[in-house]
Length: 193
Image (cartoon, rainbow, N blue to C red):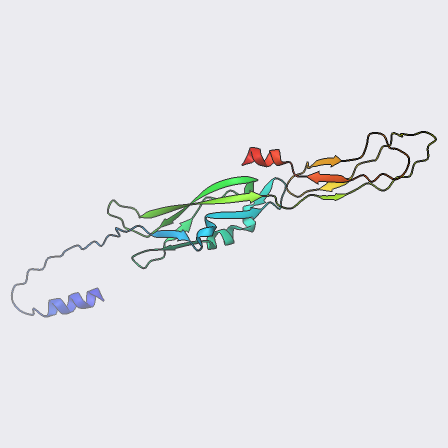
């Protein structure tokens, strides 16, 4: 289109001496893009630890990116990204999102804005526990020392949950109900937070 206009411009002076000069016009983008959360509550993004010790970011990258919105005053879509490792352990992880426009900026390069989001990887699911089978012991004396066995325990995020029981060291005659409890290793979470 410019060549056509230039051609028409030159043809408007068919005779005589014409002196043509050019002028360079640079339009610079002086406004940084805007970046924010779709919902302010997403400034803290909570993720359930569904793997030993934490969570793979592959499972929630899309939802995490969808929590961020960015715009540019020049009506060009800014590029938004954040460096995310492939795995996050239990705890709090600040992530810096960056929105970059296409520029050119006055100093060269592009304009950018940053936003910090905290990803909280937590283990809110209790361990699963199956007690050992019931025991029947015959004895002439009481109390009796009995090996109650151990429960089967599984927790996705904590491979070594704490196991406790409320049974006595020595069992009297009669029926004694022993309760077993499995709990997270809260110290592991506290150390990684």
